[in-house]
Length: 414
Image 1 (cartoon, helix red, strand yellow):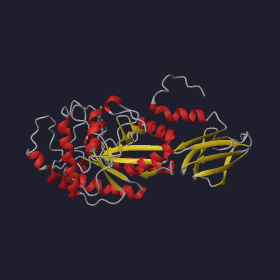
Image 2 (image 1 turned 90 degrees about the horizontal axis):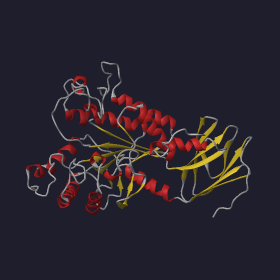
Image 3 (image 1 turned 45 degrees about the horizontal axis):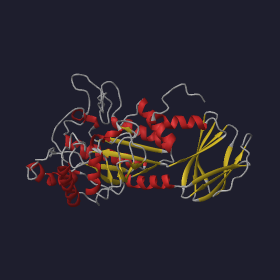
Image 4 (image 1 turned 180 degrees about the horizontal axis):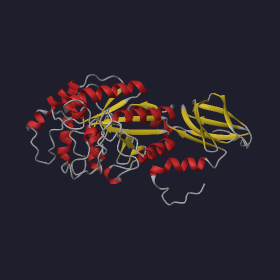
């Protein structure tokens, strides 16, 4: 394979590059993590009786609260049940208090009312089940960077307020994961977060996008500025699958056997104004929620249902998990001690913990479990097959059958 390009450094293409190399080999093996995360940022949202399009037309004047806590929630719970999903909702404590300077009045009405407003936001939710985890999205929605939080002492005080709010109002234990507002954070700010919320052990920013100095463009692994936290960055977003998002998703799954996705309940409202500008909008085509719009474009919900259906059909081995479950899976994956050996018509895979693997075989070669391992999925690819293999801890043996199966000397495992 010859890549006539100089952009192989781009993280977004990592999976494509890996499988291009696999295609040159008779048998190729790669360890994968095998999980997917689905995040909902800003839920429960701020409350309002605002009536806005396109929801108002589709649901006969339904307001903001009615959509978020009835229509959206009911449909997303049905989607979760249909596809066997798990969600993590990321909660902002106090949308009403945007003050971040050193002279903030800690007795302001925005602060004194914040706890009651948060309680009402949770009261509006019809019901949370065990497949929904709650994570931290900030005290307010100001990103934890120098420009937004110039005074670190005030940041610490308001994060302590957030901790108190969580303790009194939010159902469940203190949060163990954090999604930064705007996906931004700075070094000193994240260290303060870690001090106030020592339970937070994972941070979920962006994977192949953004600026490293703003906490974006993160690898899966320890956070460089706070090593006690594990980075679980997100790669795709929204409700409808564009060509770009398809590339991002497929490459991420191809590289690591991981898919990380996020969306917002209010995406439907983020559509072009009278100016017609569509850049950076989450609903640039002015789609409805369930119904098709005047241009015949399907609503956001059926688009997302179709997207998840495609993922379930193409990658049935992807396990949808909460963020805390994903963190545990990632730590096991990164700390796993794996050795692979080929011998006379066989593959041995030794691993410390139960693991999934890509095993790509070229045309004419098939793989068959001999000891412990299982082939849980097999898909035709160009000039071969891509097998998903599940291995138990210890030694797993697979026989290779067919013309062209590799022959070599068995190497003892250590």
